[in-house]
Image 1 (cartoon, rainbow, N blue to C red):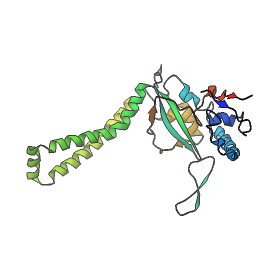
Image 2 (spheres, rainbow, N blue to C red):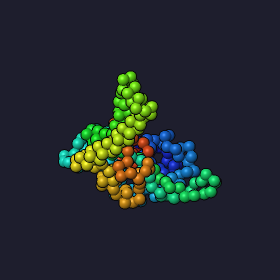
Image 3 (tube, rainbow, N blue to C red):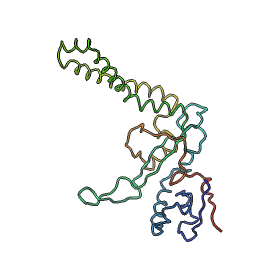
Image 4 (cartoon, rainbow, N blue to C red):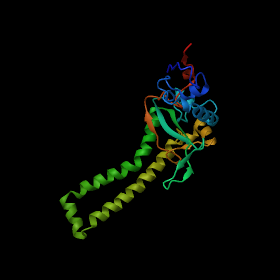
Length: 248
């Protein structure tokens, strides 16, 4: 992305903080509407720089190869896995529901875009969908069976609530089966790919600096996928984006 930086009066002009913000131009930058926030932004960007892994996060999305693949050669990048990361720094305060000032858990948000091949995306989606689809498919099948008059009448003769008892029992069993299936798939998939994004060196280095997944602390957090890369905002720029076209 070719950035057009023209506002020489801005305190961030020709600074590393401006490059880290990675806005396409001065008109799009939020400092254009609130220049007084420049000092706070510079301080926040300085904190963010100290929390970034060596080399930044650009290697995650600039790599032409999948970052999840264990086997070599790694698969060709087909999309980006999106993972929202958070850090407690810089420390901020917020109002609790009773009006008291408390320290906020999150001081910085950073979207990660991780190069992912088509096979790894498919595996991650299967692991996300199995716990839901197996019980759902089972429920639909049972409902269709119970619509058969002969079966429904036969069960009702045993007891009026027998269809409900069978439905609940089979659904609970399907949940257990789904978890067992998921576990076996995880074991199989882990031989060829990294299921935990923190196994990726760059993301692991971020964890060592105190970063955590915003959506929770699960070992394998759910991720969304996008075929297009975000190119505006903190954490979305690569080395080529730092070479902005500045006014003379």
